[in-house]
Length: 103
Image (cartoon, rainbow, N blue to C red; front, side, top):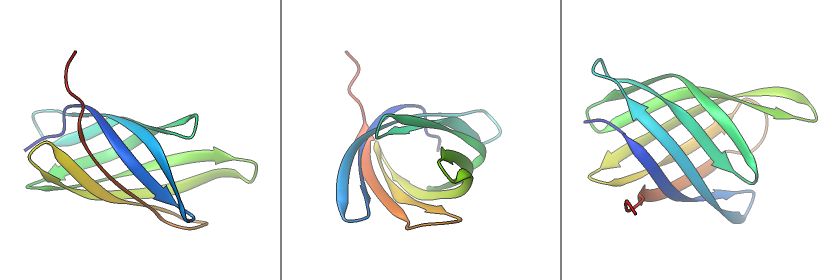
């Protein structure tokens, strides 16, 4: 199973909820790549993989404190995804959403 397309998600972090858009793509070998966009920022998903209904990858966010590495993990259920983003520094975020309808 792969993640291909734009996912509209609700991201919860530090007690607040944000609209987010994740643009994700899986190749034939199960390698996952894409961007995670929220709060006016986009981070690039690197070294991602999909295994069955689970996915994971690494990303780096830029902040006033410099670059912050993050681990992204989640599950796929049909067109729905959910998971969490754990930064090396700071609070984790959770997300849940679905594949955006094609217009």
